[in-house]
Every structure is written in structure tokens, then in C-alpha cells.
Length: 309
Image 1 (cartoon, rainbow, N blue to C red):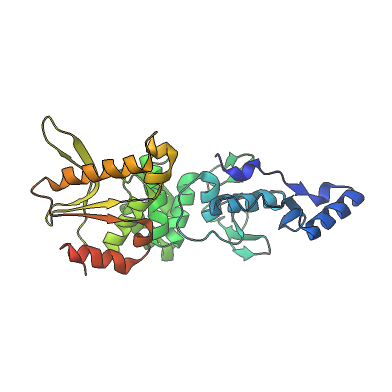
Image 2 (cartoon, rainbow, N blue to C red; image 1 turned 90 degrees about the horizontal axis):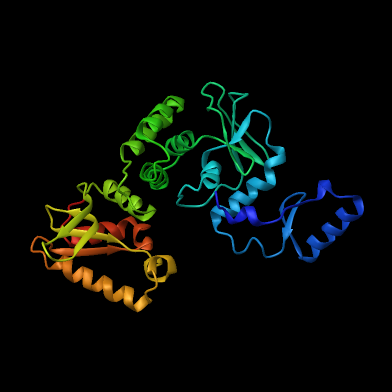
């Protein structure tokens, strides 16, 4: 799936001879090797540059020999292998779906969710690691996590054609009653129009605040002039909401050869164009950090006339 964690060489001391094992342990004590799991070492410093999702993938890789027969990586751990967006910390242990039992057990290495009453379909393989199917993974996350974490994954899957609404709905049968309502509500929010996890999070925030549902990807255009598609449009209040990330001004792939100054200038011209429409009263921008604070979102919307509870 393209995780940088698959480029890191693992040293499993259990496969070494006694002299090599002692040398590896001395290297770990000196700090030239770093321990991922007991008996699993990597070159010192190789973990530091990894994103949190990739660090969890590395933890999974280190744990593979201990995955029992009949189990597959699942839940948030599967999200990391499948490249699904995630908000918040990754679990400290690897989560498995175990089709051989109904019980959930916690060990030093794993959280094993017994799913024999609702078994998953044939697991896929990611670099040789058995992983629960993507629709099952998304629904399990939706049943156990707040919408802020699950809706970005749902939107991502729908937008990129990784799963359909029907695929996800079928998996609801595997959800325990206490998580069914939560999962169903999250799936109902799914949208193919969210262009980024930040947009998904914004939609969750609007729903949490009781704001009206905005129009996504609304286009403003005049004959013979430029066009501009906005992230969110509240027509009754005349409010445009855009979700900005630093990548828009710093990521070379998004800059497309432009300088940061050029990107800022073009964004200013675009905003001037939006404000030229008489129905547009306000243009509001939220950063990722803004979206992480519900009260900032509430205060900003109320200030421009978008009703909230």
C-alpha cells in the first residue's frame, strides 16, 4: 500500500545464531539498534521519520509471526495497512479479528476480537500480511469510534471507489447491537464529494453543532469568466466555507511548480472572485487546528450567521 514502514529492514533476533543475537542485543543497549518488539530490532533513527500511521504498520510487521491461524489484522490496525485516513492516536497494540472464537482477549502484543458469530470474508493480503476486507474494517471502526474518526475513512472509500454504500451497509449485520446505531449514523453521513479528510471532519463538526447541511463543491461561475468550486456553501446564510491545509502552500505536488507566494496570490484572487457574487456575504476559512476545536468552529459560524445549537 506504499507505507514507508515496508522499506525498513527488520532484524528478528530469534533467527540469529547465539553470537549474532548477543551482538544485536549489545547494539540495542548501545543505541545503534532500536527495539520495535521484544526480539525485533531496526536501525536506530529509522523510526523517527515515520508518520504515526507508518509506525503502526511497522508494529504490525514486527508482530506478523505471532498472528494466530484464523486471524487477520482488523479494526484501526487494518486501517493503517489499507491506507485509510485516521484522526487521533493509533492503538498501542495490534488489533486482530479472530474467526476461531467469540471472545475478545488482550495480550502483550494483540487485542484479539472474537468474531466467529459474524466472520469476515476471505482476508486480503497487504505485503503478505492477512488483513480484514476494507468494508468490514470501515464498519468496525464506525461502530467503535466517534464520527470524527470514522467519517473520513467512509468518505475516502466512497470517493475513490474502494467500497460502495451497499458494500458498507451489508457489513452492518456483523456489528454488535450497541455499536449498530453509531455505525449506521456514520455511514449515513458518507459522501463522495469530500475532497480531503479535513472536509470530512468539517462536515462532522457542522452536524455536531446542529448547523444546516451545506452544499458540497458548489460552483460559482459567470459566462466568459473563471469558475470556482468551493468546499461548502450555506445558501440561506450566503456563507462560503473553505478548509485550508498548509500543504496547499507548501507541498510541491499541490503547488504544481508555483511558489508559495504565487499560491497565496492566486488564492486571494480566487477569494475576490467569490466575494464579487452578490449572494456571497462571507468567506470563512478553517485550518486543521481550527477543526480540532469545536468551539472555534461554533464561534466562527455564529459570527457569520450560520445557526448552531
